[in-house]
Image (tube, rainbow, N blue to C red):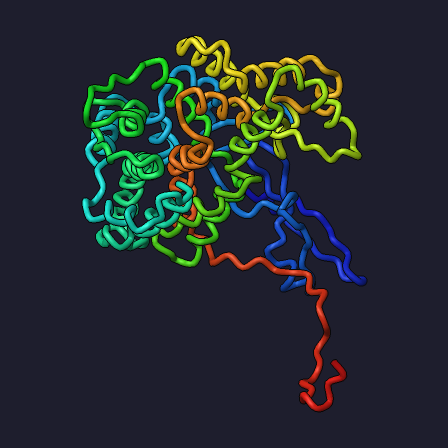
Length: 433
């Protein structure tokens, strides 16, 4: 909230402006520059918005220096250890942990809305058989607005809630169908007697010709991956959802926009890039040579899955994923996978080599989640799809918060123009080139 008694003074060509300083519950104070252009005739310049708060939010808080991640004030470690994804969804969307009755109603609503309109299955056959699953996700999720007309009025709170629940419920089904289409297997319908994560694994790995039983250890690992990726403050895809939503676009279009942004290798594709790096190394014996190239700046060798733009300490999600990765590998009895052996060797180097420690290049959540997803049987092309399934609830919660914010207005970033000044049109006959 703003403290009108606390201001910062900015001098511009002899004119002094008073900028209110706003104080959050946690984190650094911010200068309120909403009237900077109107009163001072200038903009701020901040590529990548590294020092700009684009909104006010009560959902997620990150302290990168201390390695802290909070959902609605609750540490991510506690939610991952003691809760589950359904509870996390309720928390992010409604702001509080559910009581028993609320939990039962919410879980029932999500479980019984996992099926998609049968006509939507025809969308998949319109894609090439080798289409990237993320391309399919962008198209199918965007098309949801063509099937669910009764929940596209963003000014109706009830319709907003219906659309939100539909997306939380149906995204795993849409993602599993993208996976099945990608590998050439028939679609598997959801089962209401399974948990959110177990149902997703069943839809991905079951086949009609035989019974498939979901391993509870693997289902719990999947659930933790969903929890850890559910929201992460104002990242690129979340900001994209908010920006798209600020125009009044329907919620399905906004989430499709978020998925498109997430597809970028610098964002959701980081775990896929980390696995590709491990494949290029190929052999644990080659790890020392690879590390030497990383340390040699002239080699321009990038270390994927280590470090984080926000976290300057150990990513709190990575600690949980590290433990989960070892649990999954142990459950599956994986001991001699060359790629996983390379990962273990890199992990060992990162936690013991002074070069990594001094630069705070710890393994991040993408490094460990990629290992887990590969062990579960997902190809790297599906990694970002699973990220999208988990992040849907965060996007929805952020979109809802933005829509309900009375100060919300359409996003319109400014720019520092460095092109040609005004000039007059020159006829073709007078052009020198």
